[in-house]
Amino acid sequence: MSFTLPDRFETERLILRRYQAGDGPLYYAAGQKNRAHLQRYEAGNVILSPKNEAEAEAVVLDLSDEWDQRRAFFLGTFAKAGGEFVGQVYVGVVNWETPEFEVGYIVDQDHEGQGYVTEAVRAVVKLIFECLDAHRVRLQCDDTNLRSKRVAERCGFLREGHLRENHRYPDGSFSGTYLYGLLREDYELG
Ligand SMILES: CC(C)(COP(=O)(O)OP(=O)(O)OC[C@H]1O[C@@H](n2cnc3c(N)ncnc32)[C@H](O)[C@@H]1OP(=O)(O)O)[C@@H](O)C(=O)NCCC(=O)NCCS
Image (cartoon, rainbow, N blue to C red; front, side, top):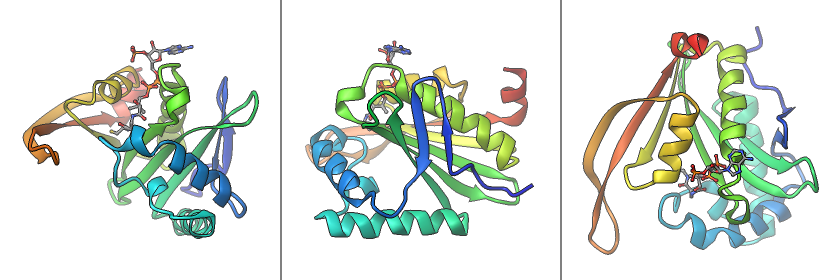
């Protein structure tokens, strides 16, 4: 077994693929467009980090290198019809010995509420178990992020914990963190 994810795969409506040379302009445009949309829950997302197209090209090449090193797998999701950027799914390595991985996701603001993230995450979770031989996949979300919570639960993740008020927003309000997990046996039982 190669213990990596396929460079490209499809779902009913989406193409998911690793980033590649030449993606800088689209990555920069997607970050600029979604800056406000991502501000509350994903202000630290790598898609917001580049300040211009050249920096974005360097970022996508870094993400591609991370993939080759099997440190993290960042997938861009694109509409099969039209090819536009729909979102991003992140697969982080928690521990290769367990093996345990982490999933994160964002959707483009114009593609929210259409089931794309659930469709993408279901496909990614399947591949994490099949290709990376995972024993466990984890996911975390802010306890006020109801859209993310619903994605996690629709994809079969079980809530294993709740950290209360462990995050403070700039306006002084607090939120907590839901901890989700999915074991191979949960996944296989469907
Ligand atoms: C969290 C986030 C990724 C969720 O995105 P989303 O678009 O709500 O999730 P999905 O794409 O799975 O869409 C699900 C919704 O589409 C609806 N939907 C519409 N058409 C659908 C279709 N054809 N198939 C399936 N669902 C469909 C579902 O009913 C569901 O609505 P509901 O949540 O009100 O029940 C998104 O809100 C986001 O990017 N937020 C900012 C960043 C963020 O918080 N990331 C997660 C950090 S943990």
